Image 1 (cartoon, rainbow, N blue to C red):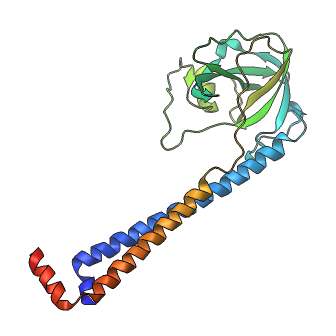
Image 2 (image 1 turned 30 degrees about the vertical axis):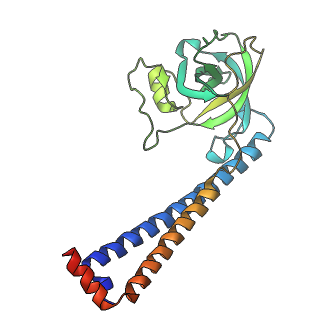
Image 3 (image 1 turned 180 degrees about the vertical axis):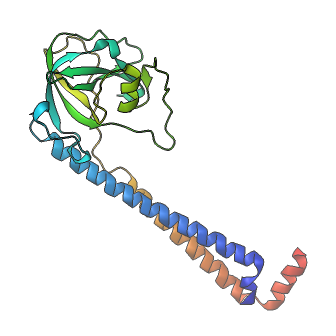
Length: 248
């Protein structure tokens, strides 16, 4: 038994333990991601089914109300349009066109008018008064490894809908808590572009299968460790001495 507590074997035990703990944590992380995805799907399904409300009568935007639909009447401020770069849709690379929209009550909210492929040039946006309907979306923040947006005051290209940063760059009184993902305009645009941004896929992804894999890998590592330890315990002491002399 003492042979399993040598410095070499203690390192092996520690390494196996760390490996198993890491894989189990990864499995539970995937299960946590699955729960988040289910909650997201339920929220999108519930909120997109609600009736369209006038924005001036809508409740304050919160995470639970994201993806609800609201109507606005006003005008686009085309002089302060920005692009959200590195987007893709239907297999094509491109960008989203985002323009401040001044509602009748004076609220200025950023509207994502839609996706434009890199091979196309976005047509001019009307400055006439119109009514729009769109999904209410929350401002986006940079993640731990996300691309960094320029803080240059003349910058008009961004990687995400970071509304405080866009408001600062455009020097407008943008609402910084939420923006609008356009569904339709009245009167409607006669151009194909920009096209409506695709809705998120409401599946559960591969999180469950990944979790099962991590649990399987951890069980495999533990089984292999038990097999090796039991085999070592069955070795005659003379064989162990010979191995140590050979390694020396």
